[in-house]
Length: 252
Image (tube, rainbow, N blue to C red):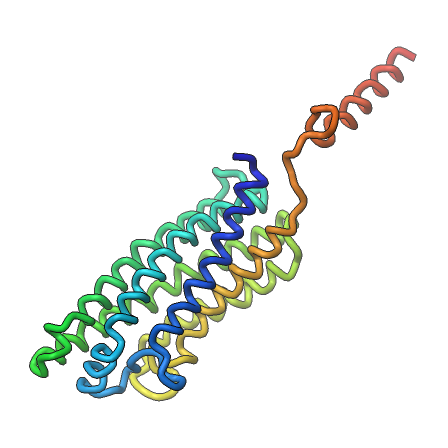
């Protein structure tokens, strides 16, 4: 597979990541409340899981697939930026995307446990259901720092390499700062910014929107490794001509 194909397939993986995240919202939307919010009673937690148990399982599946696609996108991004594999920025971007996967698997495993009938139907189990959900929330928001490292490393890489448009760098910087600060949301006990309220998940959607926008920019990159009509690599003829001119000048 050529480098151009790898970059474009990784870009499509980034776009698919956004589509999967939007599908998450469609499975459990009730008015503007998508999940149980910290501050709800135990009975309200149980009622949500009872109503959306199927949607909850759909969310775990789609977000797991999205996290795996995020690795594909991250590796394609480092190629699009022409980062050497041994460089620190390449390591941070690729490792961050990889670490997100087991983190999301743990979050979704706890979320799935909370969706089981044994917890939902027995009022005596509701405090345990809430405990699993709280553990899920802390892990979920803890992962924001990993998302932020990926964004901040990408911002530095875009500025250094200039292989992608400048806006991809400063938007990564802005989203990275907001995402890093978003980890503090897990400490909020109630109110409009309580975990899993719509404003509290804004950092995650900033990341997915940035990935999608950059994926579109990657799709617009010109081919890098297509041979010319003479079978030479692009630019090789010019290099040979320059070398010949220099040799002729030396003989003269």
